[in-house]
Structures are given as structure tokens and as C-alpha cells.
Amino acid sequence: PTARCGRTAAERCVGWKEGPMTLLMLWTNKEADATAINIAADSRLSNETVSWDYATKIHRLLPTSTWMAYCGDSFNALSAIAFGIAATSNTDHLQQAASGGGPTVQARVQAICAHLQLMFSRMPRDWQGKASLLFLDYDHRKGRFSAWEVVVDGTSVEAPREIELRAKRIHCFGSGAKEAENALERLRPTGAFNTPGFVRVLCGEIRGPDRTVGGSPQMVMLQKDSSRPVGFYWPCSGKERRHLFGVPIEFESKMEGVMWVTPEFEERPYKPFRRSET
Image 1 (cartoon, rainbow, N blue to C red):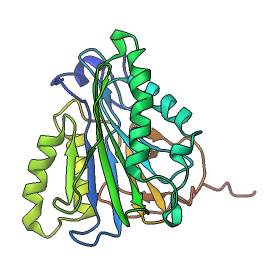
Image 2 (spheres, rainbow, N blue to C red):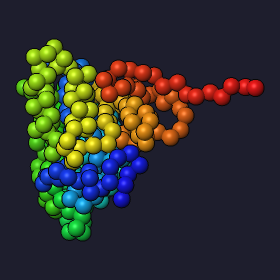
Image 3 (cartoon, rainbow, N blue to C red):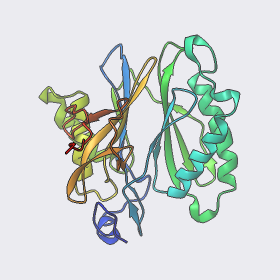
């Protein structure tokens, strides 16, 4: 099969690797006293036989301000996770925690893990695989940003592990992590060790030789009391097109809640096409 915006499946799957197939990057907006946290990813799901470049890997856990990012290669597993979290969103575990009320981010993640453990134990063997889930939000109970990793392996859901945001500013996950970390080390002494620089690293890895990383970039910026999706102008079918959460946008709308940027992270608000009256 051939995707609308890319190579054939056989060409794209050269260089396929064991383990979670993707690149996720998580970072704070500054080294100390962070006022924002960012999550970004590519949009490719791939294994040794097929590749798809339009996977939404970053999901909001409504009705809360918590976001989840998926690091794996299975569309079936991603779908099961999304369905499971949709069911959990109707419980008290995911009630909003503004103004210091409600459960901590850790408690929410633990509740989701308990539900996913039951779901994965009933998943067909052919759909099982290894993946990492990242959860992030501002924890009003603790007064700081909080990020957690959960590893799913077959039918096993491991206990959540907190990601240390103060000791290390940027974290990379997935099959593209090593190459991204090498690029970040080269970036560090240049004076561009910041959000635009990190986004350029992600875009460089997507365009690079690792065929387990691809599609368009997708990103969300989180602050204490709000979050904002970031959409990218990205090539598709020979022309530049807006992409949001890995999906090409086919309709005319400003979508003013979205920050639209170029691959160099230069902001470019969208101006819908208007027909002239004759």
C-alpha cells in the first residue's frame, strides 16, 4: 500500500527496529522554575510489514487538563488505550483538579493503569505489543508540573514511573530517541537549546533515515491552567498543508485555539481563502 504523503510500505519499513516505534520528546520551557511543559511526537505507526503516517499520538484526557502521549507501533493497541481512557473519563478518577481539589496526576495515572490492565488481558495476542504511555499535567495538589511513564508489554501494565523534570530538562522516548539525543547534544553548545531548537531536532529526525519515525510533527504546550495544541505547516502530496495531531486539515478554518508554526517553529497564523465577489 502507498500512503497519500510518502513512500510505499516496503520502502518506508527499511530500518525497522524492535521496540516502541516512534519518537516522543518531552521538555520544560526553561531549566529551573518552569512555567510550561511541552510534548511533541512524529505521526508514524510502523512494524516490519506496514507503515501509516497519520496517527494521533497525543490525546487529552477529558474533562481534565492531563494529556497522554503514545509511544508504540500498534494501531490496535492505541485504539484500545483511547477507548479505555474514554471509559475512565466518566469516573471520579479523572475529575478536574483545579484549585487544589480532586486527585493528583499520579492517582489519575494509577486508575488508568488498573483499567488498562484489565483491557490488555482480554486483547487478542496478535494485537499485543510493547509500548510506553506518557501522562503530563500541572499537579495543583503538589504545585508543580508532573509527568509519568507507563510501560505496557503484552498483557502486562507496569507501575507508573515518575519522570524527573527538574534534574533533566528534555527526555526522548521510542525508536528515534538515541538519534534525537545525539542531535540535542550537538545543539547544546550552539545557544539554540530551547523550544525552537528542540522542534527543529524533531523535524530533522522525521526527515532523516530512520524509517520508524515519520509523518508530520504534532505538539502540545501546557501551562499551569491551560494548554494549546501546536499545528504544523508540512508537505503533503507535493504541497504545503496544515497538519494537526498528525492529520492533514482539509477544511478552511482559522482554528484560533491552535498555534500554527513552520518546521523552524516560526509562528504563522492561518488566513482562510476567501472568494472574491464578482
